[in-house]
Image (cartoon, rainbow, N blue to C red; front, side, top):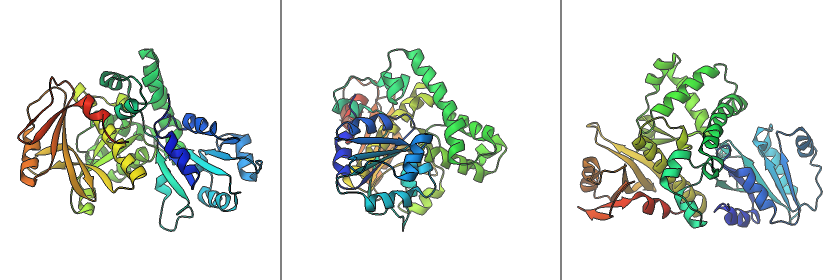
Amino acid sequence: MKRYQKDAIIADLHKKIVLLAGPRQAGKTTLAKEIGEEFSSTLYLNYDSGSDRKIIEEESWIPSTELIIFDEIHKMPNWKTYLKGIYDTKPPHQKILVTGSARLETFNRVGDSLAGRFFLHRLMPLSPAEMHKVGENWSIDRFLERGGFPEPFLCEDLTESKRWRLQYCDSLLRTDVLEFENIHNLNAIRLVFDILRERVGSPISYASIAEDVSIAPNTVRKYISILEALYVVFRITPFSKNIARSLLKEPKIYFFDTGLVKGDAGVKFKNFVGTCLYKHVLSRIDYQAEDAGLHYLRTKEQKEVDFALTMNHQIESLLEVKLKNHHISPSLAYFSEKYELPALQVVKDLKKEHTKNGIEIRDASQFLRTLDL
């Protein structure tokens, strides 16, 4: 199937380097090769391949090549300086596409050698909005059963989908984590990973996890940061006008692959909605240059709302996620009334959409497919 971002990436390739980042097996390499077919001559080079690595190091490609695709080149020492040199000396007709399964944007620092030379595109798993825009069939139940990664979502056999996930987990923890950083205690990060799978949607205490795994809280923080950098999980912090204070409070952790979540149907559904909202936020950042964000709300009295979409550090709307309950969440009503904020409750199984006391009760399928990408 065609990925919705394809045309935007091709347009940006005519302007600057394109960095295409995202989770392992989200479809980056497939999309990159499909984009390559749109050009008269394309060279695909994977840094993990010995023969390709030699071509990369020697820069021994034909100058007339119109598109060069570098895959996993962030594993190369001083890769940013290398790309800067390639970009600054390439012929005018040549385009450069860089893909990787780590957060390439984490290398974007002040004074970075690639500053002003690239556009970032983040390819996330499939979502109702993307499926709707490209005209493909989907259902929320299929997403909850298989997750949004293309291979398990699109395959006919559910058993094959489950086999994919087992191999995916093993590859993440045995290969990607070790390649990203030298971890001496692989069993400990696996335990942290398993604990996070059981605590999706709940505030995370580093100290509590540290006690369970018998490691230091800072080590837990480091392990979660690695899982974030590899696009395994994403972190949602409580909203605060003081951003520094917000980052110090307990975050919630969600998985890019809803199939990894251990919990009841409500927890899995909340994770799924979280992935759709996060993809929506990244799209607003990458394609509309908006200062968008995703947070949650919580008071000392335990009043809590699942998600808060923000713009320029101000709340745009509040969202509460429910499987079946069409009764308005008391906490959602409290925050909406007290702070005069737009609010909606997204319900998976809903007979009829309606508005009550200024709060929209939305059918999940209708709401999720209309999110901007």
